[in-house]
Image (cartoon, helix red, strand yellow):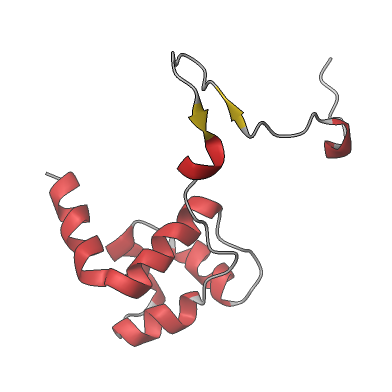
Length: 103
């Protein structure tokens, strides 16, 4: 039977070690991507002049997720926050890369 234990009971996070399947030691802090704690989705979308549906379709989000993010009913997951921050800073580059990987 699966029981969920409180996170306080979990061991502390490794700071140095070998990733599974790896033969080398890495500094996990040095390789961790920066994840913004929050992103103003509405400001990014409005600056691009897109509706919620257009924004969702263009960048691979669901329209309900965009709506919930903008209404602060839900916060984007870390990977989505990272992508949203990149869209906010380099939309042309993100659009080009999305086109390239969709081929």
